[in-house]
Image (cartoon, rainbow, N blue to C red; front, top):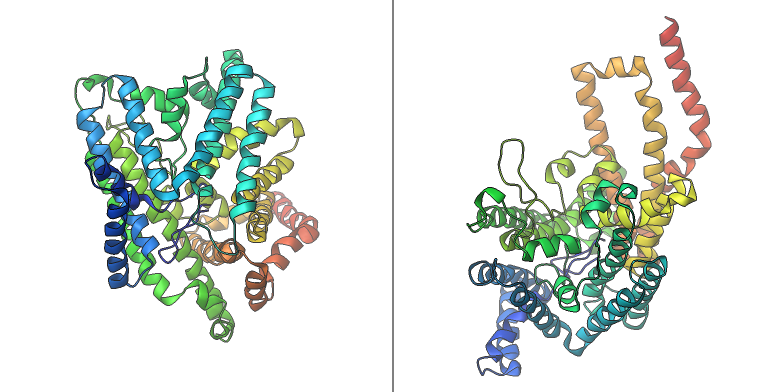
Length: 507
């Protein structure tokens, strides 16, 4: 789960959320004779004034403004470079991404360039082998972790490690894709066939791929094959290949939805904030009110991620890189880089619904390159545990990440273990076919996901054990007791349900 905040608007999960895009605007004027220093002073002064008037941190305004500046970049590419010579497009993307990175992090942008060069050498020398995958994985993850160790503080840090998170997954995935490309096609899954690379891309292609301005700092994740098809002009409706793709309206509509979530986040954070749930006034609330406020707080925190993902997805749509064929009605789809499925998310009644709908690109990446590659473990249980450990490590060293993903793991274990047993109880399912009972069950399940998602987010948001343990204590560690205690009572509970099923069958 990537993390952001209008107070802090910084990343985390997935996928990862970037922040300082606004500053890129100062790079372009310098090419016309305006000094970077003068432009930076002007932009910082303007941002500071706007942030003060809105009563939000300057970093939040910079994040939002810089994301929005992705739209003019996309429009420039659309009308000047779309469908043109590939090398020109590569250079445009590289210069744009590097300028954005330098504007945000100065010479620290060299960390991404160093990772690019090392990975390219690995792929050129031993690409397509098991060794290349291991070397790319170890190098890129280690480099990221060293960055965390040398730069992190007790707060969320806006440093070069943010885009490095996105870069780490891309470069590891690139090694896997080349490895898949050397396999026999019949041994590949459907998704692997779409991403497999038959040969090592050129240095220019890889550099343009990782510095693509619509996703360099914030994601979303997409494959090298998608990028190559995009610059080759293949990601478009073949029936209208001579026309510019009709992606502008879908892109701006997606961004508009993001602004709607920003409004909800702003209003919600006025009522429940991170500071409030660690304050004594929160613990003094009644027991049931605390649970409701916790669920509301968790929801508000998720909305800040969703708002950013929707706007950045809108940028990628306007670029045209999200083309995903046509639906059953022949309407072009632009959800190829979607990072959230709003209908599934808003109607979630199980934690698995959140996984299927929230930060989907990072979840998909982990499923394809971590979870499914661990078949040799011979257990979905161990594969899922290892995948969540990877996610926690990828986020950093804060203990809150590990506790959060542990809670996710035990909740998912509970759902996957008890779900099939409940579904096999014919008598129970017959009762659920009653519309009134079905509505009541839906309401209970909504409360369940609403409340315990907030519970699971406590360590992820607060990070420090001194904070999240204090909040857990406010709830008497009830979530831990319920889900960690479930395996102890599971045999009795499942036998009881099966007995009811058998009795129903006999009747």
